[in-house]
Length: 158
Image (cartoon, rainbow, N blue to C red; front, side, top):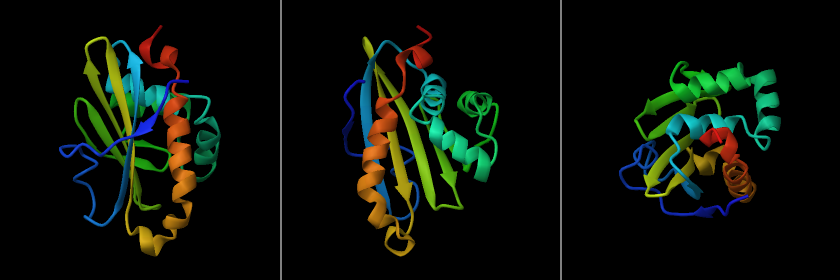
């Protein structure tokens, strides 16, 4: 598993501009060899073994979350996956919002020479009122595990 680390949220990103100024946001990165597209990253993330338990839970409580559903949202053929709906998508980033949980997930790719930086971030609105503050330590750990668990073969086609 490649190293993952926290970094500041890119100022011009969809994540930085989403929600209110006082809301919680985080951003983690992982550098991988080669060129990886946004759709490859999203599909690799949602189809990873580390995300499988969450996909099973999502199917039971939030709606379609199969590998095919992950592929469809990754490629832009669908507007939802489990609890998330596409809020906005650009060529190199996408923001998925879950109104029911007051959270959002952000994915971005930044190719650079012989590698691609994968960026994964979260937003939580009204963190003080929602009770999410008590879950932050676990959330940060889980976010890093999820990003680290994306298999290169699943996203690079190798």
